[in-house]
Length: 193
Image 1: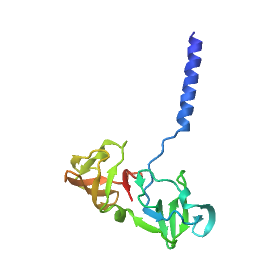
Image 2 (image 1 turned 135 degrees about the vertical axis):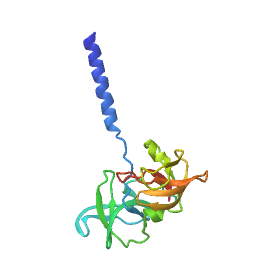
Image 3 (image 1 turned 90 degrees about the vertical axis):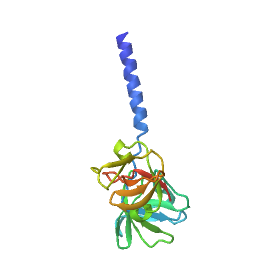
Image 4 (image 1 turned 180 degrees about the horizontal axis):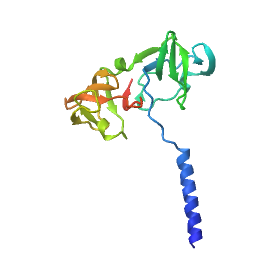
């Protein structure tokens, strides 16, 4: 009887672990330095390991990773840019977060640094963050005094951006600072473009 129970328990654990392994949790999106907006009808992008060296892929714009929590209200496709060099953007080009370089100067492209993109926009903190992310601070540092809590999912208006922090005003007219990017460089906000 104990042997039979042990076998059933073992099979259950193995099946449960296989199901969990088949459905990995998706990590939050890396923030990089900004977003590149491309037209969906843009021809394939040539992706290089280094600018003009070692071509590693040709990908249609529509096959690039979908960005969690960023909703496109126009046909443009948002792509994370992690760095720039004259004539090139380094982008995240697949769901494994591999990076490569693409040439700039493509028709219809628009690059927006985070400070320019977020200022004046309504954003909301995503769910599932640690408690300290849902509190307004009186200055852009983790050790700053707490001003007020923020409701999860409620939009706030961005006044300015300083580093990984943004000064916001809530619907209740309370202002303070919250992070838009965590200490690992991943986005903690959602918004529409």
